[in-house]
Image 1 (cartoon, rainbow over the protein chains, first blue to last red):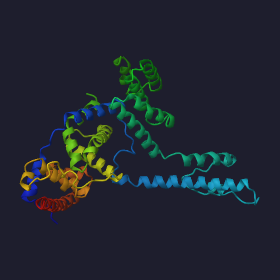
Image 2: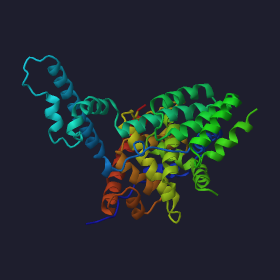
Image 3: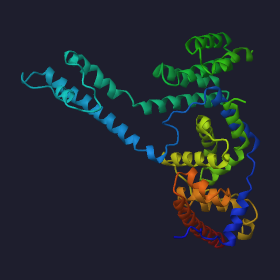
Image 4: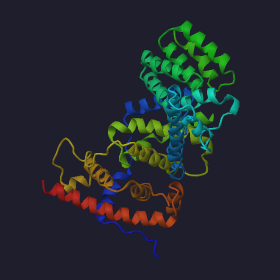
Length: 225
Length: 170
């Protein structure tokens, strides 16, 4: 068993040598990259696990999550079918499918207490089915805030407020709510809406009193006329 | 210096290397900015776990490799030979060995090597990273690293030969 690698021909070696010297990144590209990096840091530089490059050994997590979501959706569909059947009582002894599904030992659907079976069935499976998985939610949150960050790094503060608003609407208390509110302050400051920026900064302080972004957020409003 | 500042400082210092590595790994010009930003975000998150006694570049390479691979998995297409098509059109093989064309040719040849092997070859033959470090960064056994290097070199030789032949026949 040999570990010696194949030697390279002089031509390929020369090509590799020509590539060894690393050319400098053009100044505007460098400035843009650093500006985006600073914005990300200012906003917390957060990245969801869903967006981090996955190590090969955790790739199985996605299919497992999909299977869980799938089984929840199946339960929801089964319940709806059962509800429809129940509303047309052709056979008074027929057992609604949803009840069968709910009492079967499906691992991803917690069985509700018997006394509250009917209301729990109405809300739980349906809402679980329509709600995206945690990874999807994290990914969607990040996507929205990335749009906002990109807009802010372009100094397009009005455009930044759109994904910020969308995030607030969809993920009011999401994992990145803190970053969102910091970005909101930044965007409002950029737009010169000082009073709103100050109010947003105060709300930020009240909501996230221990935030690491607090000094940055509080430094923002006076910085812009 | 706070950890965030240290991370930003490292990113700033190594930005040339990061960009070049992304190009070497097959990223297009239009993709490099966004991928570099992704790399920074991943780096800032992983920074608390970074062992400062170890060299930074192999660490950055590992992140870059995973980011480019993830990007590829999302289905964005790679355009082979895209870089080698240049404005002036008629580079001779001799010129290629001495100017930007040589780099362009090499990058295009690298694109023809599957990513896992390409990563080993870049780290070893361009960045001079020791094989043990390569195996560690890419989380593969040392023997696999050697095996990939061997195959990658063979593929690079073949790709360069094909491309030089193509240029010759123009």
